[in-house]
Length: 477
Image 1: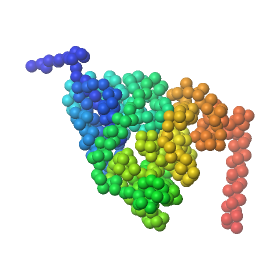
Image 2: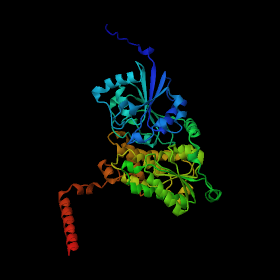
Image 3: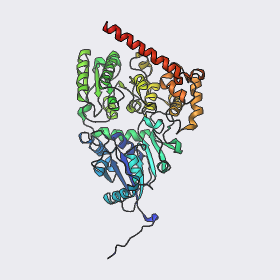
Image 4: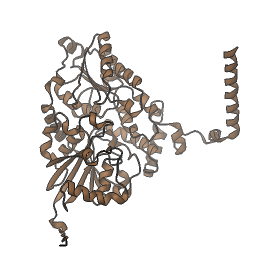
């Protein structure tokens, strides 16, 4: 007996939306998008969870995080991308082009999708796992949601037009009011802001379900008199895992955060380490806190920083360039301070590093922890006026990062650099980069021959050789 093929007319097919999330913050963003009506109606909504940690087996997935159970009812089913492609890692696997139709057929059978029309709502479309999903479901329209500061920066690499032209919208949180996202504008993708009040309501739901023990730290009456506020909260980011800092340098950065909090009068400090950071960092901070006469509480349960904001009412939130610094200021009206951004601006390589715009935003907007007057003056939340002032800077940095993808930003970059390049703003640019792009601030053209002049290079090499020989002779004599 031969099988009979059936075809369902498009108008009669069901619509299934597949949402992808790799963090609880991202899942909360998706929940807010659903609650706000920012995504259209669907017959089914599936949440595809991806654990992108270096060692997923030792790190809790999104659906295992405290508070996720409050988000689960918004989805008809929760799926695991790690289990689907096991033993491959989500960050390193994508289908071969010729295999994409086979994978789509496989996933339709595995997830019981049938002939449903698929809509994708994905994060970080430039890389896998989001790119892998977009490549599997080749005809599906895509909405991209951005839950962090990277949405304000350029797309980190050139997207395949077969993917880029399918993207309908960029959904993002209004982390910096007045600042316009650059992400995906090369495809004229419109940006749509998710309502802040809807997002904070979702965060409140997660906070209600979080364990009470992790947020029990409170400032003493004496400390509240001295600072006028609650305890200080330090946010860890595990920057050494990104090869930006060494583990020792990151330990010292945390110690500087602690010292800064104590210098401002805080004697009760809470440290929220990155979930995958080594435990020895917490022990070192506890030792240092004892030396400084401060009481340190380490949050060893994986909860969102926003949960701590709701429970603790911190008097100061300290970090490097975490997105949570902006949610503290913009969404909760909490005083914030940053530290270490100057080092990161110098260390980030290549210049196109996608962390550059987030670091630039935090450095430009927030006060330096070690500048006590600036911290006191910067207690007011980030507002739309301060965000609007950043558009020129972010456009200039974005063009320098991805000039080939965003050639239309050249005039804006030239205007900004010609008018604002000074001792303060030089930290956001590299002279070599400005020279390569022929922008204001570049090496003067009459001196441009020096790096390429063979005679000058030969003299420099000879001078270095003579210096080494002299030092060697001195050492052996």
